[in-house]
Length: 329
Image 1: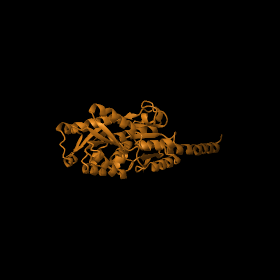
Image 2: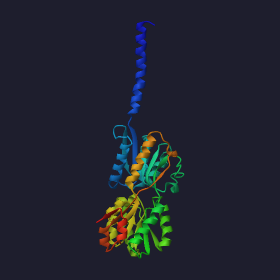
Image 3: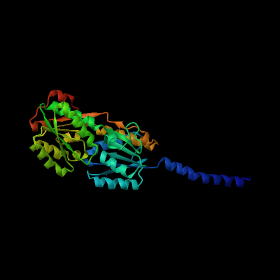
């Protein structure tokens, strides 16, 4: 081969190699698309979402650099969730992160291939979302609440704070199937605590006023609001109605205590959203959801609203206040 032929061969080799190099570089810097699908409203979820973003950055995924996250909210409307989930699957997102059980089922119904990461989803092994916590199977994994166990603690705290309670109204959204295990947990705990339970269904914020009027007329001692995004969205209205009707209550998410309910006890949403980001990173690096064990909530928060206690004419025992992670004064 003469010198001219050698140069032409090298040029040809370089030309052939260039596209492969460019493809490799493009792959290394490709922006991966993630979707977040929330059951409820965006406003009360600001802090958990910020925690999610920060945790993604700590895992090496920076918005606009190698990842893009879209946030979509169902606004407590099941039909909206279904349409959003269909749109996300049609656009071939690489991971769908879901907050709360209704969003998880909306995504599960429309895809068995796109990885789904749960955050704050109640008892997914009992609702049929996954096979079991250790080996979830399918395309879903993430962070779960064991709601059936948590409600027993909620009833214990409420009755210790207000001795003499005999009848509790259990408020649920029947559209959220994860609340079945929470209701069963409440029924199991009610016996040893000598409580009678009245189940009150609330499907929309517009139902709250009538529901509180019924509870007041039934002369219940207090209320247990099961964990549903609808009640987070309507937290201020719930607080107002609880004080108006003289009903001390407890729920799971601290935002509801901020809204005016007497107290809350439940898993930290911020920690769960941080853990959700870790699951996303593992999947983007090649992990299979079916083989990633579902993480159970590990950090819990107990919040007491003393402003509400004063409005209800209640004195919360000092021993209870010392156990609180946060007291609203």
